[in-house]
Image 1 (cartoon, rainbow, N blue to C red):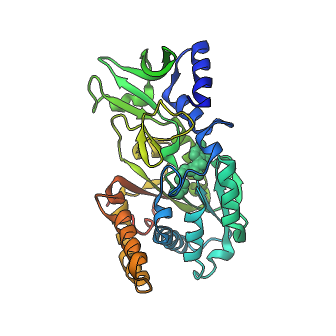
Image 2 (cartoon, protein in one colour):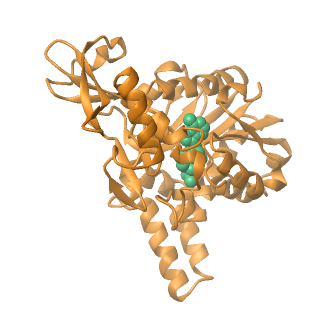
Image 3 (cartoon, rainbow, N blue to C red):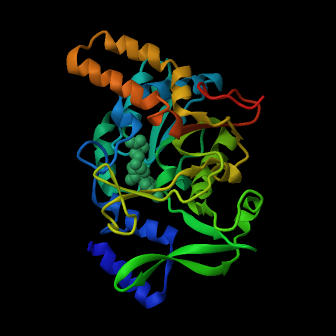
Amino acid sequence: MTALTGLLIARITQSGPITVADYMAECLLHPRHGYYATRDPLGGAGDFTTAPEISQMFGEMIGLALAQAWLDRGAPAPFTLAELGPGRGTLMADILRATAHVPGFHAAAQVHLVEASPKLRTIQAEQLAAHTPTHHDSADTLPDQPLFLVANEFFDALPVRQFVRDEDGWRERQVGVQNGKLILGLSGPTPAPFLTHRREDTAHGDVVEYCPAASAVLAPVAARIQTHGGAALVIDYGEWRSQGDTLQALKAHRPVDPLRSPGEADLTCHVDFEALISATDLIPARVAPQGLFLERLGITQRARALAKALSGPALDSHVAAHRRLTHPDEMGTLFKVLGLTRAGEPAIPGTTHDA
Ligand code: SAH
């Protein structure tokens, strides 16, 4: 039993079942036993890997897309170059390297990072020392100036509530205790006005997820872009409108029961992009599959150029990394890219607006 299991059982026994969102929040962010509070979860020795950790090409494409979006908007200076949940800082480091020769970009960019994990903050500060990044607990404190922002595999880590449709309405999934073990149960009928639009496309027994934190995090980002200009790219696995139970726990690159290792496994849910943008006035790009987005930006040309200097196992792993990022059987279709811009402004390269 993990340390956090004991604490959760005591809390639930005393005060009653908790929502799946409260359970996720404790597992991920508990100050002493939370998953992100205690470790660097990325990479081969960790529990999962992410696109920027697979290849430098991912961050290079994002960097050039953001730099072009900045040029398209008149190259405002100064501006905030921000990332939500930067992990090891690899994506931001690749963005900065790829944009080093874009005239004026580095001189105008102020790097801001929103990060909850003290451990990862330290790694990011080292990785990005040359650019003196400023850390934030939330997007609310980002500067009031033009904002160019990226978030990769950030929104999937935010706590999600789960509801089960019954005849007339909804019941919420809860984590309770039975025979000294954590179990999943259901609340009584509960009002869920934020799911009214989901009554049309669900039937008795369907599970629908709702992430209250997602639109709350995006709201201050959208407000800055709306007022001062800028653009945002959100990359994550999910769908335009999600349906079903997508809660997943990963430990040492393997799926495990989400209730069995609280604090020691990564917990994520798919992102519902429609719900994510519901609190913004920004124009969403049509959600692009990651593979298509990267192809439009020229990842294959870049892969060929890098391949020229490689041979043997290094070449093999480079080719495998390109495939992993783009192929429909790998991350190419499961992951989606959403571009957010002000009305009347061009789409971020690699994304397209509805005609
Ligand atoms: N973007 C990185 C890391 C993804 S892991 C990459 O692609 O490699 C998720 C990141 O979000 C981690 O840095 C984690 O510490 C951070 N994070 C998770 N929940 C958060 C929250 N509520 N507030 C701020 N950061 C959070």
